[in-house]
Length: 207
Ligand SMILES: Nc1ncnc2c1ncn2[C@@H]1O[C@H](COP(=O)(O)OP(=O)(O)O)[C@@H](O)[C@H]1O
Ligand SMILES: [Mg+2]
Image (cartoon, rainbow, N blue to C red; front, side):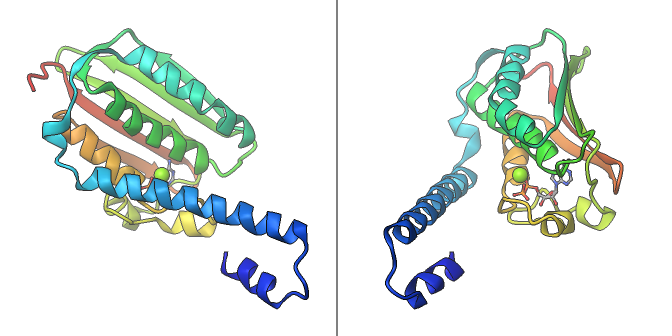
């Protein structure tokens, strides 16, 4: 952004195409700022009171998310494989969808356009809990980063290495949403092998 403005200012007699280019950059930046603002507002809201709970078919919900991310996964050459059982859960579908979407979006992104990039999304349940896992065979996360990635604005060294888009808020949003539903989220990861994020939700969700 800064360099583009600099070039624009210092160039001799900007042409229409230069204006077009600058407008596109400003539009993109504006979109990013709006999204950032939305994320920050969301994080600062009192989550628990705002949950809109209803019976949700998690299989359908996840299928929709995967479909919405198809453009991105194709662009990155990543195959998304699902193994989804029929599970229903009393929850806020809009928020839960944001959480799962963040995990799948990260998994695709941190496959880093690897040729054989694969993301697996599993949904299963037992008597006690519902487990949603999102795993990838991408970059993996260094141990020193693993404790901090759920903090606001924290981005791991891998994000800087590949110059990935983002601002380090996704996982803090995931954590907030999952905890508001009485669940927990965790990660297992190995550098060079990949990462597996797991959301665990209580079956008897009496909130
Ligand atoms: N699937 C993944 N593979 C490797 N690293 C990941 C993955 N998901 C998250 N991370 C790491 O966790 C950090 C925080 O994630 P997030 O809060 O979603 O931020 P962002 O995606 O904007 O970088 C990322 O910067 C990255 O270092
Ligand atoms: Mg993210």
